[in-house]
Image (cartoon, rainbow, N blue to C red; front, side, top):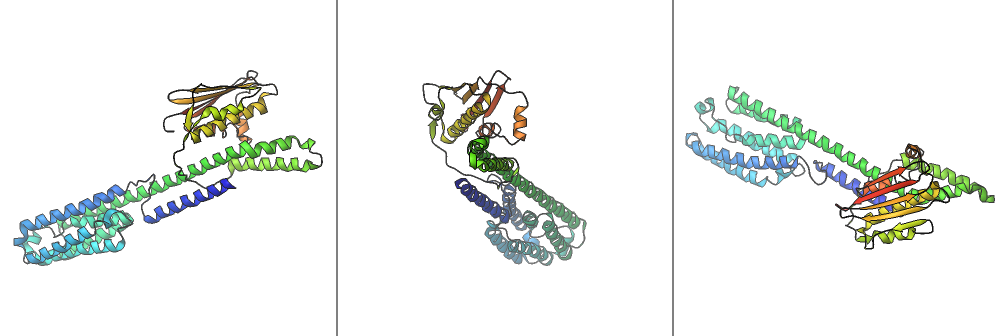
Length: 405
């Protein structure tokens, strides 16, 4: 029940975070998003484009019919660009209201250019007041909604150029095409990035669900399944409680089916770094009449979680010895403390097994090796290798690297 409670809390926490991130409009994986640098680039572009437009006007404002009007426009445009710079930090802040206001400033500047500038300058190809600043508006629409909103903004800017500043001219058509291509391309790239991040997020959820299933499978195998299997094997000794043995067998088969195929919710666990423990103390209780433990004379320190998981894998290996090696089999545990890793070997002199036996056992739902041993070592970033020859016993070598633990 405690495991179910923790799994439920973690699942709800993971789902809440994922939903909040998706609602924000920018999917993130591992705390970063590929589109956020693009938003920063758009913000820088707007400021640089504003500076360029002001310098262009500064060099030619005397040629305008109403130069004061232009300076008033640039004053308002500067205030708006600075005030909206924070909004252009990401899609969640850059609302459609902000983008609509930005588009209104761009269209106003283009139309004003056709009014306050001289007709001969306009026909000669003089730029509009905002010049390339209007491209920042189109890029904002692309970042917010993809290529379709970008195409809409580029169309509005293009119509403003045609209707308010020179009509259908080669320069206008050229600028409109460039703006349309750039906006749609950026919008399409952002859509692809979001789709890719959504797929990656789903893959991480599936991986988390698989890891949780394996973890629960190990716990079930180490406790519940072994008890149920023992009760089933002693069904004939239970007398009037023979039904208990049959029920235990049914529950064992049901649990094995769940472990191999039942879906479990994804989980994301965020735990503080554990303290170190001496692996020797966790393995020493296994020593007995038929089990010999050999370990260094100095402490073999590992993080508490890694030490506990490695000791549990050793216990699972000894359980396999008791169940499969034979009544008179002996086992030897060797602990090796190396600078870059800790290696534990469990060897027995039992009957051994033929090649392919492990695969058959896994298909039958017996996951002692694949989950309780290899699964634990894989989660720790280590390895577990099994060597066996019929009639010559079995050896399990488990290795946990120190780096990253």
